[in-house]
Length: 92
Image (spheres, rainbow, N blue to C red):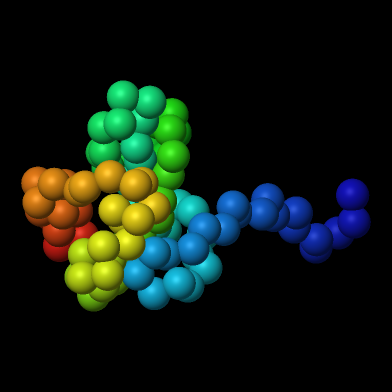
């Protein structure tokens, strides 16, 4: 190994649904739809199912709500409860 060279593992990149900015997966909030068609916030980033990502920013969340982008991605009506839970996660 050569002196002074650090080998860094590449972080997986994902795109925020609100601002369309690519960021490291670990810096985004993952929302997942599982096989039972249930939508939840995936704090671990490892739950099974279709994932969508969102910045930890209330403006991005408001854009997603206004444009119904999450509903289009998951092809399912999103309950107000899920949006409230997301607001809670972001505003913490």
